[in-house]
Image (tube, rainbow, N blue to C red):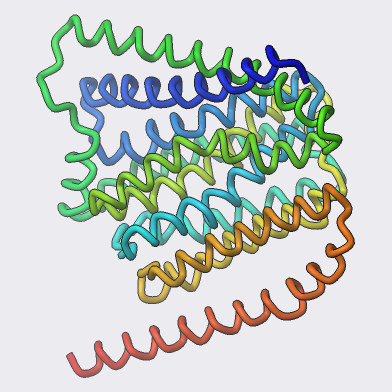
Length: 366
């Protein structure tokens, strides 16, 4: 890979991140001016905006015939959202999840993840399946808007403090925000093209597959808006935003990103055996792991955040060992599947049971 391609790859990543930030802020202000509540803006406009890099990269990859990059970007981003972003956010401060919608969204996220796995079992997400996913994101958005009316005043205030415009918005500022949306979209589209081209050259240079590049470098790169949003929200104590951003982004990735890309691709999105055997099950497992944490106790403790981050490191290590065909891969896999994962499952189950029992005792004595 020549120096120019590497420079374009780095610039493309920067344009994706900058374009997403500009798009989110400009679109949020426009929506607020139109009378949309800050909570709805946070659950829809911001979630869509932070997923815009994934949409651009996945669509560009599918149209260029690079399905491994496309599916790797979506699956890798969802894994990074739960294990890396949610884990880092919980390390900053324990996340007390009081948002009703977030609790409802976890089963929906699991169901959608399972649906994508079922769609991919024949080795392809067909065009009609992509259209079904796209219809799903429309239904989810309508559902999110209706559910937002039931949120508590505390949650409404939290979103208002984060997304409401500070100064009054004049006509000139409206035009500036429209321009910001257009410029943000342009940066995202051009940045995605450079990033995909650079990633392809990067894979060829180092002899690794486009799938590995999509699952790691591009997945984390396109998830940077989510990383920034969630961690900053955690630092500010806006815990509902930190968690809602991750869950909403995962749903937008599966329904919106795969839906748009699958609908545009005449032959659908091909899914390799490697993704079917390992990466999709990891994505589904990560989604399921959220259920006991959210449903019982509604707290993501620091030790659970550390566990999530550690698992992301283990997942990345596995990808590297598999890509390089390292001799340690069989031992690593045996330890992971036979000891680490079962032990973690038992630990989470015990913690969930104890939390549920303590909650029952508290309600009984109250």
